[in-house]
Length: 428
Image (cartoon, rainbow, N blue to C red; front, side, top):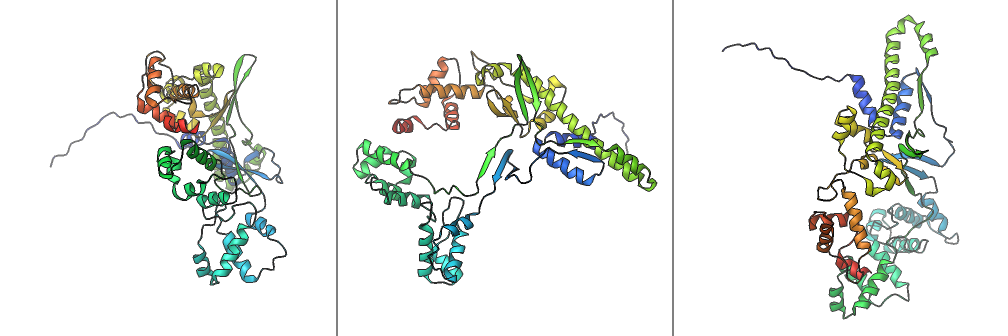
């Protein structure tokens, strides 16, 4: 065995704990940052937090879910609402009340009853007659369709009470849901000996039915997207403003520091608190500075979009911003994570300012969104009696020097929730 010692030069970049903490703060949305500040304020007495004023009695309370800001309106629960609808004259036995309570607890978000009668009387040890009667009581309440088994069952109930329903509407719901979804008109015409017009009329009638019952007084979840950044034009110049609705103002309480300095045995603890407090304050400032730098760079690069709309958006990459701003690409990625920007043309995800480009002759700066808009325009102006196929759309785009495949056209069309030419022909 031979031992050998070698010496080599190696350059490593080691991130401090402070830098890591600042990067973590950078990727937070405004609401997430506010939550972090509140948490740190509980841990560190040196932090002085002036939170935005919210009325504690307000029925709107913000929550965060999947990058969206949701507000829950506090209303009566479903159970309370339904019990109020049951006529007082009904002299319900304790047994029936127990069954009704059980059934209400098994209504899903669409008010469908997601449990079979056999399972109810098996679990509660009650008679089939009692369970059946309680289900009928629920189905007699508003809204119409409450306690239906599922969506097809609810559609059937709507058809059964409508005297003007097309003759084959109920049969289509019971046996031909796939054909309806696929708009397979020839199949329905042949099987039921219907004219094209009768088959179309029946499908159009079914499509106008409600898919599930709706209870207006239920607690509903309304999603509001609150932008983290707003771009506005003032006297001909574009300005960037970070929304501070949820971000509290954080400072270090110098008076409390002086008070703790008098306690000699707390000096190590004091230094740790000072370090953590300054780290948080500096992190907020650094986050604001970084987002502002990125946004000002984007205003310069995407000025055509801000002036003309979606058609002016050009392809950009994160690496382009990183090189221009002397930042790491991962820093750019963190800064734009789950954040929204308000522009004169609506609210966009921050990452929407970095669209991918399509390489083709004529307009090398066009984005996939630009081409989607062009496809949408072509379809909007087509002859409704003879809709454009994906092949024809591709040919039209190639005449404009847009070299994309038919498969790409189909993918973009589907992302716009536009059906194919066959379905468009039957739906118009």
